[in-house]
Length: 254
Image 1 (spheres, rainbow, N blue to C red):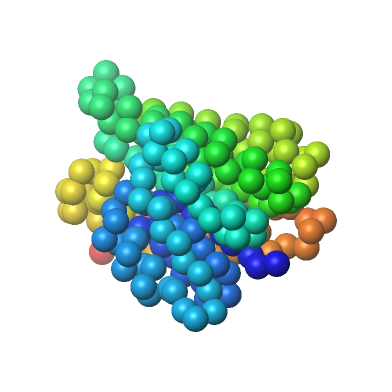
Image 2 (cartoon, one colour; image 1 turned 30 degrees about the horizontal axis):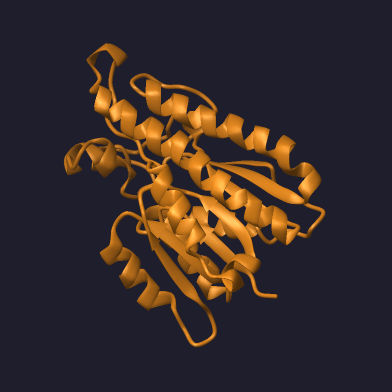
């Protein structure tokens, strides 16, 4: 029996790094994302004679697309499905609630919460049928505490944290592990998306300290997915050494 990991949001950041990490260890992959060109490029990069890389181009916010994409998977891939990494997520905007753009709220709620729910609902029956499995949900330090201007983003990641705990209760009798991964400041596309392409503001977030890299989170995800069967890392907070909380940093700025 092979090992297959399904990774959402695989076209950049944590998702892409996780796909590379698992592929390098010989896993077969199902990679999902909205940007088809990036999915195709990653597929070509990772596909070898010894491992399968299937791509599914859909938006996790659209339940119909999610169901159709998961239903299209071949029986051999589904039969070997071992891991689901719910990585797709984003922050859009930062500021006082009364000054927010409500469309930003919709994007975060639809992606970070509803998207995770849609994908999980479609995949869990497959893991149950296989008799075991592992779900990894990408939360955030923003799911453990709140900070000024983070309101709705923090709320969505608190929801991910709560859903991870609920999934553990729902799935423990089926031999399905659930892990919640909560990164601190990590330098990916995250801030570029949050600040809507404003590179100067995005880059200032990481100025004066060494942030986490996508590879750091990919390594952690791979580790929790490869513990012995009797071991589950249920909740893992990963911070840069220079970060003590969501707002406290040891920054060295000249």
